[in-house]
Image (cartoon, rainbow, N blue to C red; front, side, top):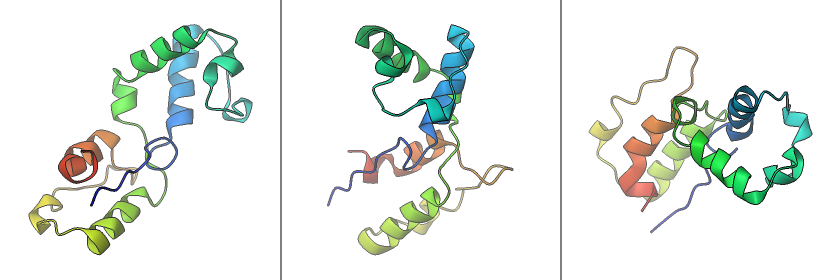
Length: 118
């Protein structure tokens, strides 16, 4: 069985993290409440091409790989694991939370890549 899990605002706090990156790079001051659509180019008044490039650039950053998780995201993944998959317990023994209680998205991607991201 293949289960797709959306990353943006389901597992990670994409909008806040992306806005921080975008504002720093572009010298702007967009806030979460300014975002009424995921078509950022409409909000920012830029072309689709500029928007795509900005998101690709963001995807190459440390900020992207360390995006904070949505509350309950890890618990949700573990519930999927318990209900639908047989994973060896050793796969989860090193799945430690950071000091702030979040787990970097890169750790989730690596831990669950074979099971969830095929």
